[in-house]
Every structure is written in structure tokens, then in C-alpha cells.
Image 1: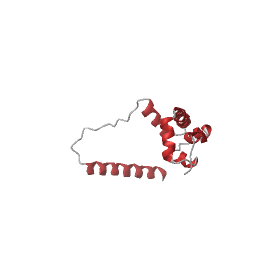
Image 2: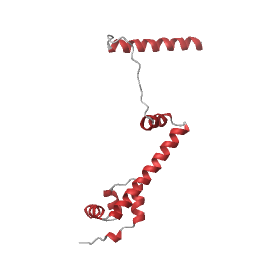
Image 3: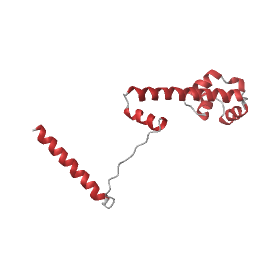
Image 4: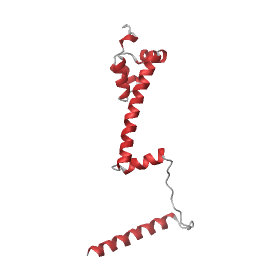
Length: 127
């Protein structure tokens, strides 16, 4: 049975793997260390735990910075809305008309017929 030593771990490489989003089983496999051994080392060694957490923090920072840049650039309206909803407290509100007695199927048919009328008007404008 091979004897694994904690000193076998390259801390810089461990941080890079963690920053790349790899989980403990994946990192253990890449470092050729049994998962149970690696789990035990992380639970007992504060330095290893700190290195893993620092790697995860770097990854999160990189993704958050990219998301923020997309949100403020105007190139990705979905990201702008996501940012405003999650960080700015924005929420979507929907206006409700007072006709609560209308059946859902009637409501859908009304929307479809309204869309058809709009399409017909657009076609007339083109001709």
C-alpha cells in the first residue's frame, strides 16, 4: 500500500485547481491521491483548507467581475437585469387589469387576435 504524505501537495497547483472550479474528488484524482486521504488532510490542515478557499474566492471574483462588466457595458441586457434584480433590489411587477372573471382561454384568444390585427396593419403599411 502506497503511503501518501501531505507534503506531496503543491499548494500553488492546488489553488489553481480550486480556482478553476474543480471539486475535491477531481483535485484528488489529478494529484493522484485517494479522495478519502485528501478529504482527511483538508479537514485536519488549516493551510490546505485556506488554499482551497482562496482558489474558490479567486474564481468567484473573476466570474463576478466579468458579470459586472457585461451588466454595465449594455452588451448583455439580460445580465444588466440580473444584476439589478440581485444586487439592486429591482423586481418585476405585472399590471393586472380589473377583469378577473375572464377565462384564461378567452384571455389568450384576445391576445392572439390583437397580435393578428397588428400584423395585418403592418402588412398594409408595407404594401
